[in-house]
Length: 206
Image 1 (cartoon, one colour):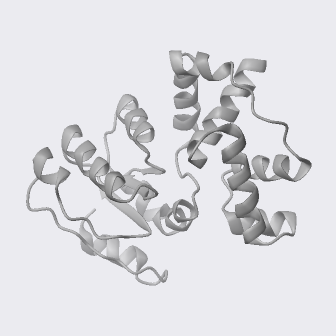
Image 2: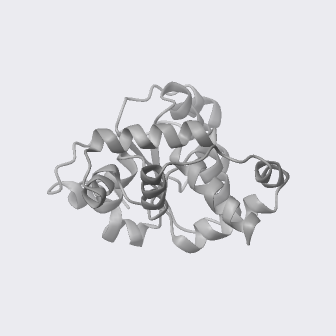
């Protein structure tokens, strides 16, 4: 997907695009690249895995709460898992990006995830069978209130804050408050980690 194609997809959707063309694809150069601040970073992952990893690490080191969405074809399942573990919130092929990018960006910007369900399911399974997954099984979160359970259920449906607020007839600020409490109770920092933990717990009970 060339840059002009990317602009064409988003020009009527109200997004402000800041493009960063890379002069070098060497991991050391990408690790030290000056990266502008953005609400969501869309990274073309056609480059070598090491180069992509270096660029994503650079962004997350500079902006720990950065929202990352990657676009690329031919990703192996293991490579997608590695991207998710690194903190990527969205994964799209080029064909999917042409149809879904304008919808995926606000979702990822709001802290949601835009990943094919089958990929997320397999990734969760891989977590469950890992040493980390067995350790997490022993960690039980604090008791949740009814409202926290409702917000958590909505998060597991991949809803953004505004959608959760509309569904529960509460303000977005209240949603953010409950999400913050959920993260604290589960002992995680990101929504993606919370979702994985919840699927892990369901797997442990089943």
